[in-house]
Image: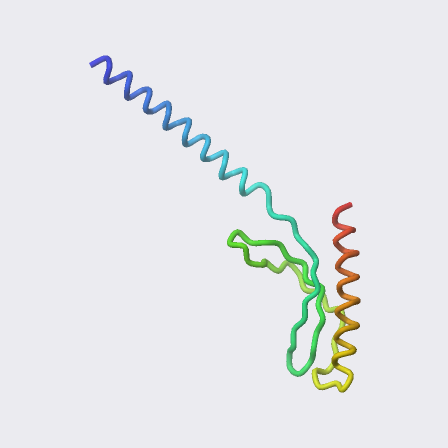
Length: 106
């Protein structure tokens, strides 16, 4: 009878330690969010090409969680100089994103 009581107490102690460790582990995972990043993006809306500065961080499932989109440039999607304007705008957006990334790391 005494042996059964000791076994039950020992089992409860082990379960308590396991629950405590699991709680600390899950709290630690929630406490450290993934770092946010700036990347250039683009979208076409209502016949207009928009080049964006996108602030995002990885979500729990690995997908992008968009925190903010800033408009960098916009021009008509049927502009005869579309390719040149798009290339120039994306280049400028990449430069600006690298600047924003550097500012956040300070």
